[in-house]
Length: 222
Image 1 (cartoon, rainbow, N blue to C red):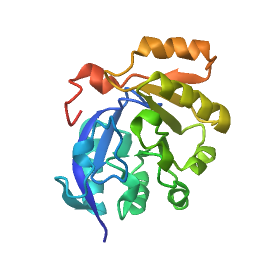
Image 2: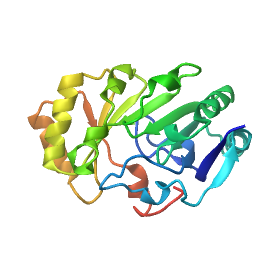
Image 3: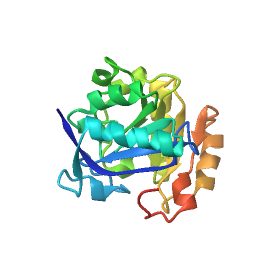
């Protein structure tokens, strides 16, 4: 049986995406193949970051407790990069069988098609813009696979990021909702709104990270 490197688990609201504000169980795993310049979970990115080796059975027990004790209907698998975990596909199937809406937060560099075959989760896929330093690793074949219930997320840290985001949107024409999100403290949301007006991005949504507005930006487990 596979063991996944679980860094932390907690119930909170979704801070972003289509279900922002909705309660969810978060399962955060260690290890990431990217090193974004503004990453806010760098502590979890190394494979040897503090973690427990958790079986799929252990993780589904955590999910059952969250359903029974806190009424959650959604689970978010995050990281690090959750799609690098051995056994993640087995976990997706098990959580779906519990009746949960399973969302994968993935960094955009890992092909998502292999994870659609047994049991398709909901994907929130990043497109890393220039300020991340990781744009060259983006697997753009993911974008046409996204459906209306998925999300394409673009985190912006500069004006150059905004222009690049507009280019990508116009080139790939995703049918899923596209969210622009500011790097906390690097770009003002008001500037992003003006840019959206200037570029006529009427189908794009600006989103602030709710958890960073409610709690300290450095708070874990929220």
